[in-house]
Length: 81
Image (cartoon, rainbow, N blue to C red; front, side, top):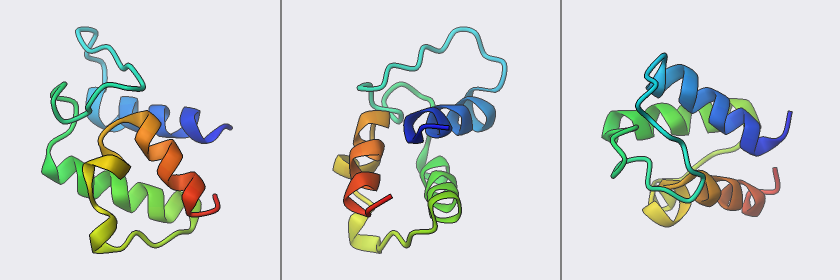
């Protein structure tokens, strides 16, 4: 499964779960769209670390890395995933 597809699947299963009123655009802020909150970001980080066998440092927990699906994919590529 492609990186982007795995991330979307995780978000759908853990944050949207059956809600049909939510669209999931890859360039939309997950927080501003109400899909994730600060606790959700921590869950996402745990998922990324365990799924892709990486470590995300505290200074990397910034919107440029984790705010949108596109940003997450781009960030993972910098981690050589």
